Length: 165
Image 1 (cartoon, rainbow, N blue to C red):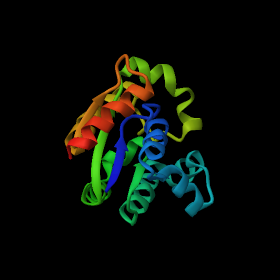
Image 2: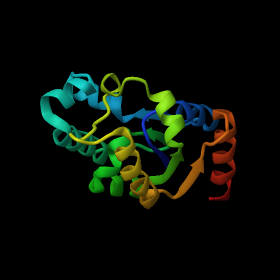
Image 3: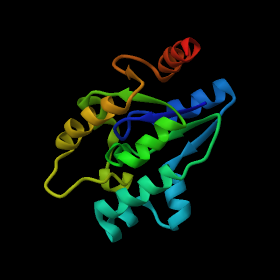
Image 4: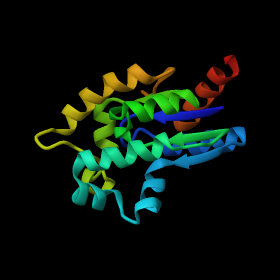
């Protein structure tokens, strides 16, 4: 079984995903890295040359082509916009939404351009947060609220959830 971690940038998809993979002897797949390997460009370069819509199409196509087993998958925060990709990720495993408060995300995120965050023109980070939250909840098999928890505590919570499956 695969587990896909979704959530806002800086919510810990990669950190917690790697910890889970190590704990359960699974592989770890970072879709942002796959995008960079396939295109030969940094995420911010793709967004600059292809625009947000072009980037989302590339991200969605790469996620929808994934053919992995026994893996923790960490897509970018914008994966929630690509229905076809999310349907594929749900079909090949379970989806975990790592819920982070806006304030905590803002504290962690740093420079959104350097991070390769696809923000539509005229949007603020708050707009993006509000819009994506509903989409994450729509696709999630389980939501883990990170408030006040360490990554290790989140991994333990996910371990308990997985044992019930």
